[in-house]
Image 1: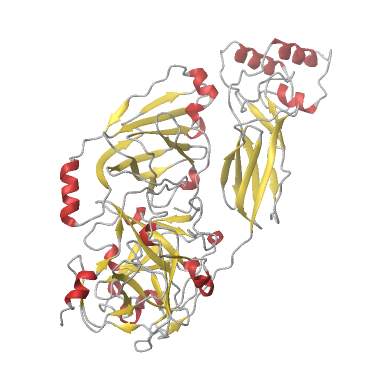
Image 2: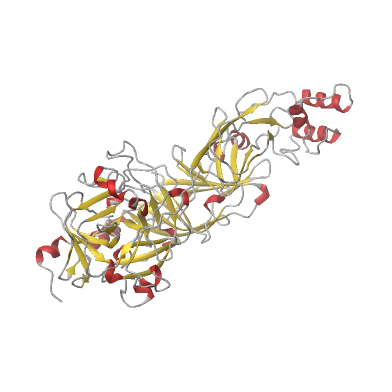
Length: 629
């Protein structure tokens, strides 16, 4: 094989990007940790939590290793074994629920990222992560975050000490699983943090100024294709980093979630595929850089399918389907071996930044000599396309991004080049050679993208039907019209969501797929004795003796504390025990009930903003309860 000219050998870099960060398609819900709630502070007014110190790191040695390996690593892994049985502190709550807390500290850490080898939250279970003064809070995470693999990852708080807090209802006691096996200690400063469930480090705003945002005029012809391209957060035993990739169609047009990326995004490393995160729709709304970081949608976990170093391709399959609400696009491909693009475009996430587009108006060429890469790998001649962009550029983190030909079909994925705003060369592994690759299913694309061996040369894109999204909202007030904050409001049905009412008793769900079957269920179970007093006992006694029967339906609900559908002496007995602290919870009821307790929204069509509930404090017949407790 011929040697690459010295000028090229010096310029060529592989464009994967190392960085520490956290953790898929479920969401987290913005709610306050249970330990911040008044009923907990009432029961444990002087509660303090002891810290579990992690093993110290030899940062001098670690940074020296980084220099020798020419890696941009920012975090080092600490192997641990922490779980609900062996670590942290359990607290029994007054109503029989319980709370587990684990305080973790690593000296001089700029942040900690937590990986769970086994993770399961039962119905009603909630997990939070926060710093000591609770100025930074992630969560809550719920059963919506459970995955078949049992794997999970939570993001980082900018501190050397973080607290995990798990609330477990009495009905599911012992069912939760939190098994931590690895914690990443961040030893370089964290610049930007995101409030998204899987909090990210750096990335946003880190790309060169000469990159072109995806929704600039240059990207007008690529608005469909962009929905297939994603940012990939790679997780390894040794660290974390960025690459780019795209959903790719197969001959069956069945939305099988294959991802095309670059082989060097995994070589020489130990990938933890269950924790790889794929971020969709991470882009600016228009041509301008956004004032604040935009949101994105993610899927967690993948499996290796095939890869080949000579053309630097990597094919992954997501472990779960991409939600249709993501509005994704499975890009098509062209495996013609001699038909070169007369023009081309690349879509990518440089430095883990928001989505960018690069445009080439001239034909791509075949690189006729071998390429010597900066990581010591040499790829054969004629295995790469050479592209000189007219607008935009590439950068670390762009690796694996697709190259589209003039027909909008994938003809390669980015291997590397030199990142610059003035002079650069880019190299893409040729899709046509990756088709047969190394001759086996694990080293070629053919078996996966044409499973029935149809022999077709090109396959067009596939766009799954996208449901419209609607919002649901309402209020939760007392009978007297006072707002009830901190009510947990759940949507059950085709999909599950959870939120909490604000100080005005308002709850809102955004981006709910239209056309589904849903039930909205509010719950609040705090301070059973709130508003329960002797006046209530007298009122119920008069009803039982038929002296002054209760006729108001809300008062009847409040008086029926044991949910027997009658008002009897047994309700009086239970209320006396609540008043005297003999009981701290009602035997057969939460402390609040809501009318209507569940709205049945059969085949929801369109938004709804009047889904209001009335909250009734059980035992409080005369309406004296404080709704904030």
